[in-house]
Amino acid sequence: MTVIAFLVGVVVLVVGLAVSIALHELGHLLPAKKFGVHVGQYMIGFGPTLWSRRRGETEYGVKAIPLGGYISMSGMYPPSPSRAGRSGRAAGGFFATMVQDARAANAETMTDVAEDRLFYNLPVYKRIIIMLGGPVMNLLLAVVLFTIMLSGIGVQTATTTIAGVSECIVAGASAETECSADDPPSPAAAGGILPGDVIVSVDGTEVADFAEASQIIQDSPGRQLAIVVERDGAELTLQVTPALTEREIVTADGEVVTAEVGMVGMTAQSEYVPQPIWAGAEMTVDSVQRVVGVVAQLPVRVYDTAVALFTGGERDPDGPLSVVGAGRIAGEVASVDAPVLNRVAGLLGLLASLNLALFVFNLIPLLPLDGGHVAVALWDGLKRVWARVFRRPPPRPVDTARLVPATFVVVVLLIGMGAILILADLFNPISVFG
Image 1 (spheres, rainbow, N blue to C red):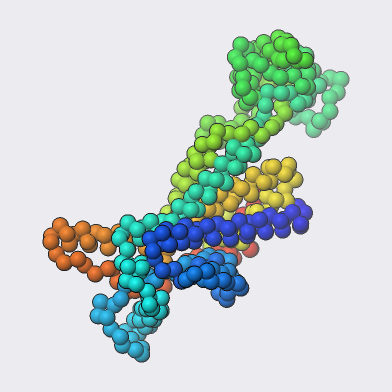
Image 2: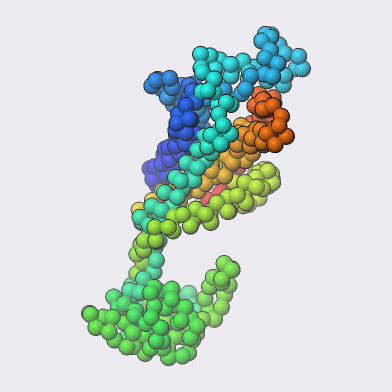
Protein backbone atom coordinates (compact mmCIF):
# COMPACT_ATOMS: atom_id res chain seq x y z
CA MET A 1 0.00 0.00 0.00
CA THR A 2 1.25 3.49 -0.78
CA VAL A 3 1.66 5.87 2.13
CA ILE A 4 0.10 8.81 0.30
CA ALA A 5 -3.03 6.86 -0.66
CA PHE A 6 -3.30 5.54 2.90
CA LEU A 7 -3.12 9.07 4.31
CA VAL A 8 -5.70 10.27 1.78
CA GLY A 9 -8.08 7.59 3.03
CA VAL A 10 -7.54 8.64 6.65
CA VAL A 11 -8.11 12.31 5.78
CA VAL A 12 -11.31 11.44 3.89
CA LEU A 13 -12.54 9.51 6.93
CA VAL A 14 -11.74 12.36 9.34
CA VAL A 15 -13.35 15.00 7.12
CA GLY A 16 -16.36 12.77 6.47
CA LEU A 17 -16.78 12.12 10.20
CA ALA A 18 -16.52 15.86 10.94
CA VAL A 19 -19.21 16.58 8.33
CA SER A 20 -21.38 13.82 9.81
CA ILE A 21 -21.06 15.34 13.29
CA ALA A 22 -21.78 18.83 11.93
CA LEU A 23 -24.93 17.59 10.21
CA HIS A 24 -25.95 15.67 13.34
CA GLU A 25 -25.82 18.88 15.39
CA LEU A 26 -27.55 20.76 12.57
CA GLY A 27 -30.35 18.21 12.92
CA HIS A 28 -30.78 19.43 16.51
CA LEU A 29 -30.23 23.12 15.71
CA LEU A 30 -32.80 23.58 12.94
CA PRO A 31 -35.86 22.33 14.85
CA ALA A 32 -34.64 24.09 18.01
CA LYS A 33 -34.53 27.39 16.11
CA LYS A 34 -37.86 26.59 14.47
CA PHE A 35 -39.51 26.09 17.86
CA GLY A 36 -37.98 29.28 19.26
CA VAL A 37 -35.53 27.73 21.72
CA HIS A 38 -32.63 29.98 22.68
CA VAL A 39 -29.43 28.33 21.39
CA GLY A 40 -26.24 29.84 22.78
CA GLN A 41 -23.67 27.67 20.99
CA TYR A 42 -23.29 25.34 18.02
CA MET A 43 -19.91 23.63 18.34
CA ILE A 44 -18.11 20.90 16.41
CA GLY A 45 -15.64 19.08 18.66
CA PHE A 46 -14.66 19.43 22.29
CA GLY A 47 -11.88 21.15 24.22
CA PRO A 48 -10.31 24.52 23.41
CA THR A 49 -12.05 26.60 20.74
CA LEU A 50 -10.05 26.95 17.53
CA TRP A 51 -12.45 29.26 15.72
CA SER A 52 -15.84 30.77 16.43
CA ARG A 53 -18.14 33.46 15.13
CA ARG A 54 -21.37 34.82 16.59
CA ARG A 55 -24.38 35.20 14.35
CA GLY A 56 -27.34 36.66 16.17
CA GLU A 57 -27.70 35.01 19.56
CA THR A 58 -25.74 31.85 18.63
CA GLU A 59 -21.98 31.32 18.63
CA TYR A 60 -20.84 28.91 15.89
CA GLY A 61 -17.40 27.34 16.22
CA VAL A 62 -14.91 24.49 15.92
CA LYS A 63 -13.02 22.99 18.85
CA ALA A 64 -9.71 21.15 19.02
CA ILE A 65 -10.89 17.54 19.56
CA PRO A 66 -13.08 16.45 16.60
CA LEU A 67 -14.76 13.54 18.40
CA GLY A 68 -18.23 14.96 18.75
CA GLY A 69 -20.18 18.17 18.99
CA TYR A 70 -23.05 19.88 20.76
CA ILE A 71 -25.54 22.71 20.76
CA SER A 72 -26.18 24.61 23.98
CA MET A 73 -29.92 25.16 24.51
CA SER A 74 -31.25 27.25 27.35
CA GLY A 75 -33.29 25.33 29.90
CA MET A 76 -32.01 21.81 29.39
CA TYR A 77 -32.50 21.36 33.16
CA PRO A 78 -35.62 22.77 34.85
CA PRO A 79 -35.12 24.79 38.04
CA SER A 80 -34.80 22.87 41.28
CA PRO A 81 -38.18 22.04 42.83
CA SER A 82 -37.07 23.85 45.96
CA ARG A 83 -35.94 26.89 43.92
CA ALA A 84 -32.98 26.90 46.26
CA GLY A 85 -30.60 29.74 45.78
CA ARG A 86 -28.06 28.41 48.19
CA SER A 87 -24.39 28.78 47.41
CA GLY A 88 -21.40 26.81 48.47
CA ARG A 89 -20.86 23.09 48.61
CA ALA A 90 -24.02 20.98 48.65
CA ALA A 91 -24.62 18.39 51.31
CA GLY A 92 -24.27 14.81 50.18
CA GLY A 93 -20.77 14.82 48.80
CA PHE A 94 -19.41 14.50 45.29
CA PHE A 95 -22.61 13.66 43.39
CA ALA A 96 -24.70 16.27 45.20
CA THR A 97 -22.10 18.88 44.32
CA MET A 98 -22.20 17.69 40.73
CA VAL A 99 -25.98 18.23 40.63
CA GLN A 100 -25.61 21.70 42.11
CA ASP A 101 -22.89 22.64 39.63
CA ALA A 102 -25.09 21.43 36.75
CA ARG A 103 -27.94 23.60 38.01
CA ALA A 104 -25.64 26.60 38.31
CA ALA A 105 -24.28 26.16 34.79
CA ASN A 106 -27.80 25.69 33.45
CA ALA A 107 -29.04 28.81 35.26
CA GLU A 108 -26.45 30.88 33.37
CA THR A 109 -27.95 29.75 30.04
CA MET A 110 -31.40 31.01 31.12
CA THR A 111 -30.32 34.55 32.02
CA ASP A 112 -32.57 37.09 30.26
CA VAL A 113 -34.27 34.32 28.26
CA ALA A 114 -38.08 34.32 28.02
CA GLU A 115 -39.82 31.36 29.67
CA ASP A 116 -41.39 30.20 26.41
CA ARG A 117 -37.90 29.90 24.86
CA LEU A 118 -36.60 27.42 27.44
CA PHE A 119 -36.23 23.82 26.31
CA TYR A 120 -37.99 22.26 29.30
CA ASN A 121 -41.10 24.43 28.68
CA LEU A 122 -41.63 23.08 25.17
CA PRO A 123 -44.41 20.57 24.49
CA VAL A 124 -43.17 17.01 24.74
CA TYR A 125 -43.44 16.32 21.01
CA LYS A 126 -41.27 19.34 20.17
CA ARG A 127 -38.55 18.20 22.60
CA ILE A 128 -38.60 14.75 21.02
CA ILE A 129 -38.35 16.21 17.51
CA ILE A 130 -35.34 18.30 18.53
CA MET A 131 -33.52 15.39 20.15
CA LEU A 132 -34.29 12.96 17.31
CA GLY A 133 -33.19 15.51 14.71
CA GLY A 134 -29.51 14.61 15.12
CA PRO A 135 -29.79 10.81 14.75
CA VAL A 136 -32.29 11.16 11.90
CA MET A 137 -29.82 13.41 10.07
CA ASN A 138 -27.20 10.63 10.31
CA LEU A 139 -29.74 8.12 9.01
CA LEU A 140 -30.58 10.32 6.02
CA LEU A 141 -26.89 10.87 5.31
CA ALA A 142 -26.34 7.11 5.30
CA VAL A 143 -29.17 6.72 2.78
CA VAL A 144 -27.59 9.38 0.55
CA LEU A 145 -24.12 7.79 0.73
CA PHE A 146 -25.43 4.28 0.03
CA THR A 147 -27.51 5.66 -2.86
CA ILE A 148 -24.47 7.34 -4.40
CA MET A 149 -22.50 4.12 -3.98
CA LEU A 150 -25.16 1.81 -5.44
CA SER A 151 -27.06 3.99 -7.92
CA GLY A 152 -24.47 6.65 -8.76
CA ILE A 153 -21.43 4.40 -9.10
CA GLY A 154 -23.15 1.03 -9.32
CA VAL A 155 -22.26 -2.50 -8.35
CA GLN A 156 -19.38 -4.18 -10.18
CA THR A 157 -21.04 -7.03 -12.05
CA ALA A 158 -19.76 -9.71 -14.43
CA THR A 159 -21.61 -9.03 -17.69
CA THR A 160 -22.53 -11.37 -20.54
CA THR A 161 -19.60 -10.09 -22.63
CA ILE A 162 -16.74 -12.59 -22.77
CA ALA A 163 -13.36 -11.20 -21.69
CA GLY A 164 -11.20 -14.28 -22.26
CA VAL A 165 -11.31 -17.95 -23.25
CA SER A 166 -8.94 -20.57 -21.82
CA GLU A 167 -7.12 -22.57 -24.48
CA CYS A 168 -7.13 -25.76 -22.47
CA ILE A 169 -8.07 -27.50 -19.24
CA VAL A 170 -5.01 -27.74 -16.99
CA ALA A 171 -5.07 -30.76 -14.67
CA GLY A 172 -6.29 -29.77 -11.22
CA ALA A 173 -3.29 -31.33 -9.43
CA SER A 174 -0.78 -29.68 -11.75
CA ALA A 175 1.22 -26.66 -10.69
CA GLU A 176 1.45 -25.55 -14.32
CA THR A 177 -0.62 -22.62 -15.51
CA GLU A 178 0.20 -22.89 -19.22
CA CYS A 179 -1.17 -25.42 -21.68
CA SER A 180 0.88 -28.42 -22.74
CA ALA A 181 0.40 -30.76 -25.68
CA ASP A 182 -1.36 -33.30 -23.44
CA ASP A 183 -3.93 -30.85 -22.04
CA PRO A 184 -7.34 -31.08 -23.73
CA PRO A 185 -8.85 -27.89 -25.18
CA SER A 186 -11.32 -26.09 -22.96
CA PRO A 187 -15.01 -26.63 -23.79
CA ALA A 188 -15.36 -22.92 -24.59
CA ALA A 189 -12.43 -22.98 -27.04
CA ALA A 190 -13.62 -26.27 -28.55
CA GLY A 191 -17.10 -24.83 -28.99
CA GLY A 192 -15.85 -21.75 -30.83
CA ILE A 193 -16.52 -19.09 -28.19
CA LEU A 194 -14.31 -16.00 -28.71
CA PRO A 195 -13.43 -12.96 -26.58
CA GLY A 196 -15.92 -10.19 -27.30
CA ASP A 197 -18.85 -12.54 -27.80
CA VAL A 198 -22.00 -11.55 -25.91
CA ILE A 199 -23.97 -14.44 -24.42
CA VAL A 200 -27.66 -14.25 -25.29
CA SER A 201 -28.93 -17.56 -23.92
CA VAL A 202 -27.70 -20.86 -22.49
CA ASP A 203 -29.61 -24.10 -23.08
CA GLY A 204 -32.63 -22.13 -24.27
CA THR A 205 -32.70 -19.78 -21.27
CA GLU A 206 -32.03 -16.08 -21.82
CA VAL A 207 -29.44 -14.72 -19.39
CA ALA A 208 -29.07 -11.15 -18.10
CA ASP A 209 -25.61 -11.52 -16.57
CA PHE A 210 -22.69 -13.92 -16.36
CA ALA A 211 -23.84 -15.31 -13.02
CA GLU A 212 -27.01 -16.70 -14.59
CA ALA A 213 -25.03 -18.28 -17.44
CA SER A 214 -22.49 -19.74 -15.01
CA GLN A 215 -25.19 -21.32 -12.87
CA ILE A 216 -26.64 -23.22 -15.83
CA ILE A 217 -23.16 -24.35 -16.91
CA GLN A 218 -22.20 -25.49 -13.39
CA ASP A 219 -25.41 -27.53 -13.16
CA SER A 220 -24.76 -29.29 -16.51
CA PRO A 221 -21.39 -31.15 -16.46
CA GLY A 222 -21.05 -33.59 -19.37
CA ARG A 223 -24.24 -32.39 -21.08
CA GLN A 224 -24.09 -30.57 -24.42
CA LEU A 225 -25.52 -27.08 -24.19
CA ALA A 226 -26.61 -24.73 -26.95
CA ILE A 227 -25.07 -21.31 -26.21
CA VAL A 228 -26.34 -18.44 -28.34
CA VAL A 229 -23.86 -15.55 -28.67
CA GLU A 230 -23.95 -12.24 -30.47
CA ARG A 231 -20.87 -11.62 -32.63
CA ASP A 232 -20.43 -8.70 -35.04
CA GLY A 233 -24.15 -7.95 -34.87
CA ALA A 234 -25.26 -11.51 -35.69
CA GLU A 235 -26.42 -14.31 -33.43
CA LEU A 236 -24.60 -17.65 -33.54
CA THR A 237 -25.57 -20.92 -31.87
CA LEU A 238 -22.57 -22.82 -30.51
CA GLN A 239 -22.52 -26.30 -28.98
CA VAL A 240 -20.52 -26.54 -25.73
CA THR A 241 -20.18 -29.48 -23.32
CA PRO A 242 -19.10 -28.38 -19.80
CA ALA A 243 -16.28 -30.43 -18.26
CA LEU A 244 -16.55 -31.79 -14.70
CA THR A 245 -14.28 -30.03 -12.22
CA GLU A 246 -13.97 -29.26 -8.52
CA ARG A 247 -14.66 -25.66 -7.53
CA GLU A 248 -15.29 -23.66 -4.39
CA ILE A 249 -18.83 -22.33 -4.50
CA VAL A 250 -20.87 -20.18 -2.14
CA THR A 251 -24.12 -21.77 -0.96
CA ALA A 252 -27.39 -19.90 -0.36
CA ASP A 253 -26.44 -19.75 3.34
CA GLY A 254 -23.17 -17.99 2.48
CA GLU A 255 -21.03 -21.05 3.24
CA VAL A 256 -18.05 -21.78 0.98
CA VAL A 257 -17.92 -25.46 -0.02
CA THR A 258 -16.04 -27.55 -2.56
CA ALA A 259 -18.28 -29.21 -5.12
CA GLU A 260 -18.06 -30.94 -8.50
CA VAL A 261 -19.54 -28.61 -11.12
CA GLY A 262 -19.43 -27.98 -14.82
CA MET A 263 -16.99 -25.49 -16.36
CA VAL A 264 -16.22 -24.30 -19.89
CA GLY A 265 -13.15 -22.10 -19.36
CA MET A 266 -14.25 -18.52 -20.07
CA THR A 267 -14.27 -15.27 -18.12
CA ALA A 268 -16.51 -12.22 -18.37
CA GLN A 269 -15.96 -8.50 -18.58
CA SER A 270 -17.00 -6.56 -15.49
CA GLU A 271 -18.66 -3.18 -15.39
CA TYR A 272 -20.49 -1.01 -12.90
CA VAL A 273 -24.22 -1.60 -13.10
CA PRO A 274 -26.30 1.18 -11.44
CA GLN A 275 -28.92 -0.17 -9.07
CA PRO A 276 -32.47 1.17 -8.66
CA ILE A 277 -32.70 4.46 -6.79
CA TRP A 278 -34.32 2.73 -3.80
CA ALA A 279 -31.39 0.31 -3.41
CA GLY A 280 -29.61 2.74 -1.05
CA ALA A 281 -32.61 2.88 1.28
CA GLU A 282 -32.93 -0.92 1.21
CA MET A 283 -29.25 -1.35 2.10
CA THR A 284 -29.67 1.19 4.91
CA VAL A 285 -32.54 -0.80 6.44
CA ASP A 286 -30.59 -4.07 6.18
CA SER A 287 -27.49 -2.45 7.68
CA VAL A 288 -29.43 -0.87 10.56
CA GLN A 289 -30.53 -4.33 11.66
CA ARG A 290 -26.91 -5.50 11.82
CA VAL A 291 -25.75 -2.36 13.65
CA VAL A 292 -28.55 -2.73 16.21
CA GLY A 293 -27.30 -6.26 16.89
CA VAL A 294 -23.76 -4.98 17.49
CA VAL A 295 -24.87 -2.08 19.73
CA ALA A 296 -27.24 -4.31 21.72
CA GLN A 297 -24.28 -6.53 22.61
CA LEU A 298 -21.76 -3.68 22.91
CA PRO A 299 -20.53 -4.41 26.49
CA VAL A 300 -20.01 -8.10 25.63
CA ARG A 301 -18.30 -7.29 22.35
CA VAL A 302 -16.01 -4.74 23.99
CA TYR A 303 -15.14 -7.34 26.64
CA ASP A 304 -14.31 -9.86 23.89
CA THR A 305 -12.20 -7.20 22.20
CA ALA A 306 -10.31 -6.59 25.46
CA VAL A 307 -9.68 -10.33 25.86
CA ALA A 308 -8.36 -10.54 22.28
CA LEU A 309 -6.17 -7.49 22.94
CA PHE A 310 -4.47 -8.93 26.02
CA THR A 311 -4.26 -12.53 24.80
CA GLY A 312 -3.31 -11.77 21.21
CA GLY A 313 -6.39 -13.59 19.92
CA GLU A 314 -8.16 -12.84 16.67
CA ARG A 315 -10.77 -10.10 16.80
CA ASP A 316 -14.29 -10.43 15.44
CA PRO A 317 -14.19 -8.67 12.02
CA ASP A 318 -17.79 -7.53 12.60
CA GLY A 319 -17.03 -6.21 16.08
CA PRO A 320 -16.97 -2.56 17.23
CA LEU A 321 -14.26 -0.12 16.15
CA SER A 322 -12.90 3.16 17.45
CA VAL A 323 -12.18 6.19 15.28
CA VAL A 324 -8.61 4.90 15.04
CA GLY A 325 -9.79 1.57 13.65
CA ALA A 326 -12.16 3.24 11.19
CA GLY A 327 -9.32 5.49 10.02
CA ARG A 328 -7.04 2.51 9.53
CA ILE A 329 -9.65 0.71 7.44
CA ALA A 330 -10.24 3.87 5.38
CA GLY A 331 -6.50 4.02 4.70
CA GLU A 332 -6.43 0.38 3.62
CA VAL A 333 -9.41 0.85 1.31
CA ALA A 334 -7.85 3.94 -0.28
CA SER A 335 -4.47 2.29 -0.85
CA VAL A 336 -5.54 -1.16 -2.07
CA ASP A 337 -4.51 -2.12 -5.61
CA ALA A 338 -7.92 -1.70 -7.24
CA PRO A 339 -9.69 0.66 -9.66
CA VAL A 340 -10.37 4.14 -8.28
CA LEU A 341 -14.14 3.64 -8.40
CA ASN A 342 -13.80 0.54 -6.24
CA ARG A 343 -11.94 2.53 -3.62
CA VAL A 344 -14.36 5.45 -3.76
CA ALA A 345 -17.28 3.05 -3.32
CA GLY A 346 -15.51 1.43 -0.36
CA LEU A 347 -14.99 4.78 1.37
CA LEU A 348 -18.60 5.80 0.75
CA GLY A 349 -19.78 2.51 2.26
CA LEU A 350 -17.54 3.01 5.30
CA LEU A 351 -18.81 6.56 5.92
CA ALA A 352 -22.40 5.38 5.49
CA SER A 353 -21.81 2.62 8.04
CA LEU A 354 -20.30 5.11 10.51
CA ASN A 355 -23.40 7.29 10.19
CA LEU A 356 -25.61 4.30 10.86
CA ALA A 357 -23.53 3.57 13.95
CA LEU A 358 -24.03 7.19 15.10
CA PHE A 359 -27.77 6.88 14.43
CA VAL A 360 -28.25 3.69 16.42
CA PHE A 361 -25.81 4.53 19.23
CA ASN A 362 -27.40 7.92 19.91
CA LEU A 363 -30.81 6.28 20.31
CA ILE A 364 -29.68 4.35 23.40
CA PRO A 365 -32.04 5.62 26.16
CA LEU A 366 -29.28 6.79 28.47
CA LEU A 367 -28.14 10.33 29.21
CA PRO A 368 -26.18 12.15 27.85
CA LEU A 369 -27.15 10.46 24.55
CA ASP A 370 -30.07 11.78 22.51
CA GLY A 371 -32.09 8.68 23.35
CA GLY A 372 -31.76 9.55 27.04
CA HIS A 373 -33.30 12.98 26.46
CA VAL A 374 -36.09 11.37 24.43
CA ALA A 375 -36.76 8.95 27.30
CA VAL A 376 -36.95 11.87 29.77
CA ALA A 377 -39.39 13.72 27.49
CA LEU A 378 -41.57 10.61 27.14
CA TRP A 379 -41.63 10.14 30.92
CA ASP A 380 -42.57 13.81 31.31
CA GLY A 381 -45.38 13.33 28.78
CA LEU A 382 -46.61 10.22 30.55
CA LYS A 383 -46.78 12.14 33.84
CA ARG A 384 -48.81 14.89 32.19
CA VAL A 385 -51.26 12.42 30.65
CA TRP A 386 -51.64 10.70 34.02
CA ALA A 387 -52.38 14.04 35.68
CA ARG A 388 -55.01 14.93 33.07
CA VAL A 389 -56.70 11.53 33.30
CA PHE A 390 -57.01 11.77 37.08
CA ARG A 391 -57.68 15.54 37.05
CA ARG A 392 -54.64 16.45 39.04
CA PRO A 393 -52.59 19.64 38.81
CA PRO A 394 -50.02 19.68 35.97
CA PRO A 395 -46.78 18.09 37.24
CA ARG A 396 -43.47 19.87 37.26
CA PRO A 397 -41.03 19.01 34.46
CA VAL A 398 -38.79 16.02 35.16
CA ASP A 399 -35.82 17.25 37.21
CA THR A 400 -33.14 16.18 34.74
CA ALA A 401 -30.38 17.65 36.89
CA ARG A 402 -30.85 14.84 39.40
CA LEU A 403 -29.81 12.42 36.67
CA VAL A 404 -26.41 14.10 36.27
CA PRO A 405 -24.63 11.52 38.52
CA ALA A 406 -26.04 8.67 36.39
CA THR A 407 -24.96 10.61 33.30
CA PHE A 408 -21.47 10.90 34.75
CA VAL A 409 -21.30 7.12 35.27
CA VAL A 410 -22.42 6.51 31.67
CA VAL A 411 -19.79 8.93 30.38
CA VAL A 412 -17.05 7.18 32.38
CA LEU A 413 -18.15 3.80 31.00
CA LEU A 414 -18.19 5.14 27.45
CA ILE A 415 -14.72 6.60 27.88
CA GLY A 416 -13.49 3.26 29.22
CA MET A 417 -14.97 1.31 26.31
CA GLY A 418 -13.57 3.85 23.87
CA ALA A 419 -10.10 3.52 25.40
CA ILE A 420 -10.23 -0.29 25.06
CA LEU A 421 -11.27 -0.05 21.41
CA ILE A 422 -8.54 2.50 20.63
CA LEU A 423 -5.86 0.29 22.22
CA ALA A 424 -7.21 -2.74 20.34
CA ASP A 425 -7.20 -0.82 17.04
CA LEU A 426 -3.61 0.23 17.67
CA PHE A 427 -2.13 -3.09 18.80
CA ASN A 428 -4.55 -5.75 17.53
CA PRO A 429 -6.27 -4.12 14.56
CA ILE A 430 -8.92 -5.50 12.23
CA SER A 431 -7.89 -5.55 8.58
CA VAL A 432 -10.49 -5.69 5.83
CA PHE A 433 -8.02 -7.46 3.57
CA GLY A 434 -6.82 -10.09 6.03
